[in-house]
Image (cartoon, rainbow, N blue to C red):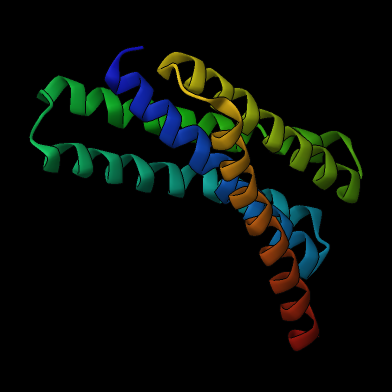
Length: 158
């Protein structure tokens, strides 16, 4: 896989999953509002996609190892993958009750994370399960922490 594509998709997909799951669970636990959860996901899909793309752009420039074209390709791939994968979490909210959509999206995010990590392990010819377990642990920590932060905020505000 081309460096710029691998950089953009791996960063964009991982960031989309972790950030969107955290925001979604936190908003769900804190507000119980489908509209706020959808608005939060759309905000992540737009604002955070631009932010992450710029972050990759600057990171790639700072390495001073890539051509101008490769830097822009990484930037664009990061934006597209972050936008698409973050936006994919909205679908369940359009068709399912709030709590069901949250559970389905957690499973969706975990499946995406596992699948991509298995692909990367195969591509890099490395052991998959240690990497998968490490990344899943991080995702689960984010889910649990944001859940309890949402509950805490709800109790503090209401």
